[in-house]
Image 1 (spheres, one colour):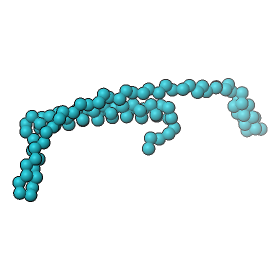
Image 2 (image 1 turned 60 degrees about the vertical axis):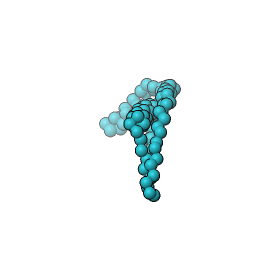
Image 3 (image 1 turned 30 degrees about the vertical axis):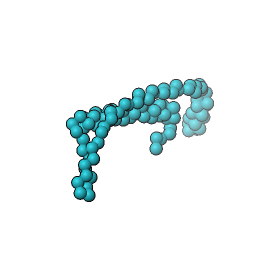
Image 4 (image 1 turned 180 degrees about the vertical axis):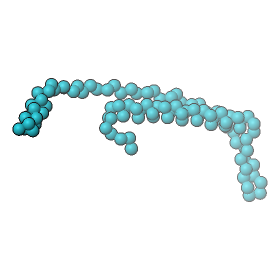
Length: 101
């Protein structure tokens, strides 16, 4: 008899508990700005041909310009990674049950 009473009590209190309505609030999507484009310096290559071999050469000034271009490209890629991470964060907030494959 105690088991039946206990079961009845559990069912009765389960049905009598207050219901909480869930609100479906839209999450604002933050669109991060893309980084500004980069202006690369012009690099003038010199081609030296000896017999059947071709050699590509740079003088000091052009080598420095090429080096600065590579640094600018690396910084731009890093900025794009930050934007991509922001988009992934926004996506995971908007769709928490989906995986990012």
